[in-house]
Amino acid sequence: MSEGAIFAKKPELALAQHKFAILNGTPEQSKDAMQKLVEGIKQDKMSVFYGKLVAEGVLQEDKALAKELEDASAAELVKLESNVEAAKEESGDLEQNESSIHRAVFLAQIGEDEKAHEAYEEVLQRPTTTLNQKLDIVFGKLRLAMFYHRPQIVQREIDRAHDLVNKGGDWDRRNRLKAVECIWRCGQRQFKEASDLFIECLSTYASPELMSLTDFVCHGALACAIVMTRSDIKKKVIDAPEVVEVINYIPNVDKLLRSLYDCKYADFFAALAGVETDHLKVSRYLYAHRRYYTREMRIRSYAQLLESYLSLTIKSMADSFGVTEEFIDKELSRFVAAGRLHCVIDKVAGIVETNRPDTKNAQYQTTIKQGDMLLNRIQKLSGIISV
Image (cartoon, rainbow, N blue to C red; front, side, top):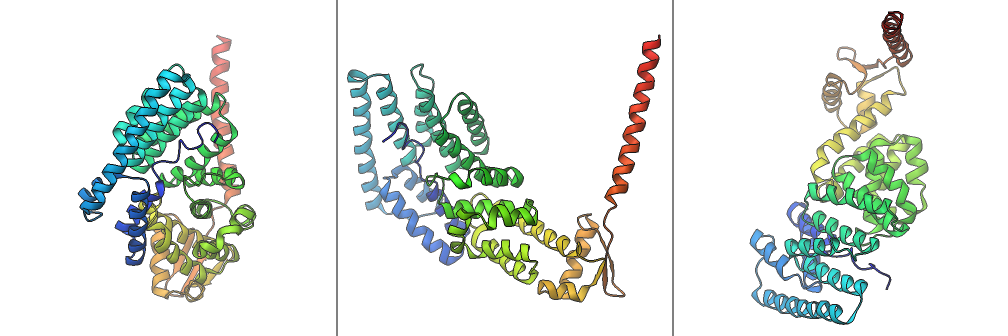
């Protein structure tokens, strides 16, 4: 196994996602997530994390399971402590650092987040720690912060990882950092940055410890849908081989992208509702932005339809989206008043008239204004020089 090959994999981020789905998903989603969460806790001997979940009321206490987990984690920790001591006596600096990192990873795995943080930091500060080892430690701390959703620490560790990568990190670690940052940007509502990172690392994605390729495509595709042009969505997302490979497992996302590109707005609205239920409401990273996302996507679809016409009836627009005239009237009125859509509603005639901003005239006015400012500065400068 190559140096650092396992250092970024614990705790399993999927378990934090399962916990989130238990609290926010549908009854079916919650039941499935509960089963997977308990299985993951048993597999990783997560005695401390199990205790936290019981205290929070996420899981019901099972004393036999708790005792089993405590015994298993204690035994493993004794073994790792022994390895650390043996490395100090018999091995070189590289092996000593690796054994210490393994111990820190296990502390993170079982839920001892504070002790894991201290253990990571202690190895990080050693003068004998190599660049790759430092990167693996930062990835471990970054993963720990993402698991417990600590935004300030996540951003700090991302910045630290960038500094280390720029000093000579290998391709694998650079790519992993892009994938992590892509998902984190989604969670910070920075969809433009997330979409750029998604396209950059999609063809070389190799971070199953972050999430499966299907889940990565789901988050990245949703980020692209809200910021990319129709042509780019088609070329860079819909037709991307990696997306085609897994898109059947996320049908509502597929339908959302294709219906937006094909201007099938009734299908688009149905897909958007499915995306909200299946993905936005149960994603740790997108849940807080679910209302913003659905609103912005509705605005985008309205604007896309209106771009094709000088005017159209409210009825035809309602028919296009598969909704009532009252719904469309209410939606358009709200977005027009907020300056998000460039149109006028003639309620008497039942017509929506577009009034797109004159971009050429706006550019002309901007040029004139900037030209006047430049001339004024030149006159002031010539006065100073002549004196």
